[in-house]
Length: 183
Image (cartoon, rainbow, N blue to C red; front, side):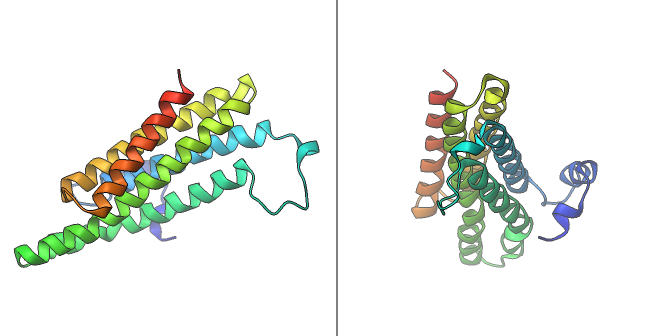
């Protein structure tokens, strides 16, 4: 990771509010996904029954999966810091179109990661104790919001194509997860 994770929360918020293009909506969405994953992980860890753990099982449990998704989101937050730079430097309309295509990939991945967090959060909430169910569902709601925001960034850059379709599908997955988990 780069400088982003070295910042205090106050420093990060100050940098978002500065008159620079980054960090902006993409990095903020990714940080929101990381926070959502942390909440889901908290709920999964508190809800884990150590007697149910099978030490020979190599599959990740929900808490481990939430930690992986949190790390993915932080990596994407760092990547987002520079993804729009080529758009600002594009000299021709063709260069700008190519740059917008490239700048759309990180927020599409953020939306996909957010959808994964939302779906995992619903799973965790379904088996969590009432004491932490709200934390898992808060993670679901934050993940849905981040997916919608990241998908909006993609649709601001491009209006069709596989990256556009992936981002839109991810936002729909996150929305469905939230609807199923919070009704």
